Length: 189
Image (cartoon, rainbow, N blue to C red; front, side, top):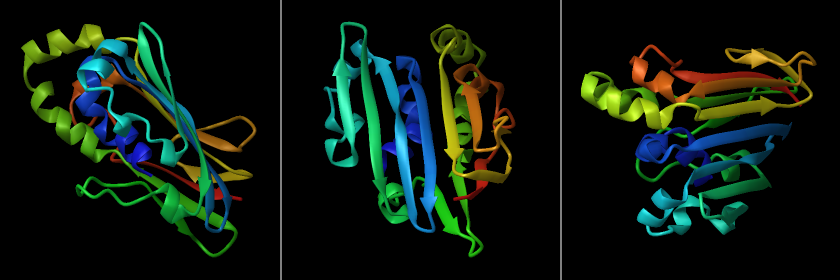
């Protein structure tokens, strides 16, 4: 699913647009998942991008909502792991789901690409000063859910059914160690 890759690895392209991402991947079985959530970007940036259908592909369950202030892509898609976590054609690391053979699945979102692309900007104090105000209050939120989270490097909910990683965009300015290399969870379905 290109939308997942765009939300995780391609977010750097939209930083000046103050993007917000909130996506949940629910493991439904040994080879089935559902992705729901949204990506939202300022309307002005969306228009500058040419109103691209790549932002919210309908064939991947995307529905776009345009207002005077923002473009919001709401996603809802259910499918096999191969359908949901489609390999990127440009070599960008894609999320991976692996059946572990015991009623559990490991879901991994690679995040190193995000911090790697930010290294150059983070080393320039003028760039940091310019982008920080635009990035304040915006974040990337990723959730992995199922019947039970066995383990995760994210925050596990009090009922144990989901794990979350929230990355304030300003954390990306803090350098490569500000966010983990990946967000992962082992999920019982």
